[in-house]
Amino acid sequence: MSGRATGGNRFASSVLDTWATMFVDPERAERAAAGLHRLESRRRAVGDVLRVHKAVPQFQYGLDQLAVSGPEAHRRAAVNAKSWYAAEAGRLAEHLRLLRSELAWLAGQPEVSGAGLAVIKGFNNARFYLDPSPRWSRDVDVYVPDWDACLAVVRLLRERGYVFDEEECPWFKAEFERGRAEYGQLFLVRTEGGRFSRVDIHFGTYSVGAGDYLDFPLTDFYEPVAPDLGYQGVNPTGTLLVMFAHALSDGYVSVKDVNDTVSLALTRDDVDFGRLAREIRRHSLEPQALLLADHLTGLYRDSRIGGFAQVLRRAAGGGRTSPLWRMHDRNWHRRAAVNAVHAYRSALRRRRGPLVAARRAGQCAVFYNRRLSVTLSDRALPQRLLVRLMARTDLTRWRLRSDACPTMIHTGHPALTGIAPNGSAVGLPRLRPTPATGVRVGGTFPDRQLVAIGDDVFLCSWDQVVSRRDAALAKDLASVQGAAARRKGESADD
Image (cartoon, rainbow, N blue to C red):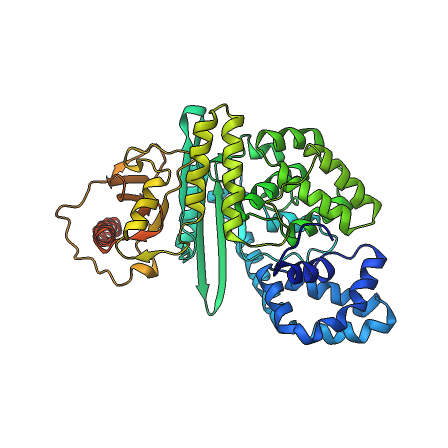
């Protein structure tokens, strides 16, 4: 088994590589069927692994295959194992149906016609599966080429009842001096009758690590999904580049990456490996591409997959895989380490010099080790020291940077529910327009910066720690903004 499974990761890797990847080879199906008896006594642990790695549908799909056409001696065991997570798999399938209907609704709105809307990641990659049913996604990831198109999508979703996600906050970046306009990501969710849907909007480009991005038009890789759909997909070359960028963000190569790549190898022969090789090197994505290629080689005997893996390995430059990278290992400290190394290599490739590269790497490590949930409190001394080490920028002057990632915390975030606005406009900062349509900024750098997207007000934080004083300021501004919007709406009705 490839991928350097270590410690507690060995069991997870064994489960995922044996029962949650596509069988393809007859001997892999035989091995998976013969080993089912070992899982009976560890059903809870197996379920935990499958949930963490979003692999329950693939597990069920494999068992379906084994129950129908696997070795006869093990079919009864496969039927029995199918029942373990059948109810959960049914709920996940229902969730996917809801997301598909939300995507169809969004793509059918005239406001997004011609906006360049495309699906990326899960909903895009499922297109390459012979049977897309095992490819599960928690959310719909859509991409639009610029902020104006993103704002149109946000307004549509807000009118439909979506709110900004409390688990992941929006962020903006840019690198104006290199011609890179605003890019970033916004997360919106909608809950109705116990049903949950989530749309992640990527705009401008796709982020790569702490301070880099895919420095080409993602639209270069657009391809039609179907004649009657109002959105595009991303072709196999673009799919792999987004996959490697996403792996860096997560800090490991996932079982989904394995299955997505196997599906590409089995169904498409149009990967532009020359372009892929150039972009992998330009964006310092070699480690994850090499690890994935080697893992595929060790896992499969199918000539189509093996050939694909060999060409992918050459595109990634060959050589040894990085000792930092792992398969199936959600270790957030290692995530910080691989991103810090990437920040260092990326800075050197941009000819920033070793001192700048080292500073970028250190800032990246601090940022990726920050707390991951919004907390309402004053910063303790260690937190004050850490936040000073982070890359920050002055949003009140819209001086966005690619290496500074402000967390934009919505005033409706549950962590701020204990703060009540007083409704007074006295002493509140004035919001000024920015070059980004519908976005206004105010407050003071670094801790009292405020951003409004339409009528939604956000307080910016670099470490997701928010003081009561600053939260009250943002709540007051949101209250005043909301009152003004209501008066404007009433005047329009009159």
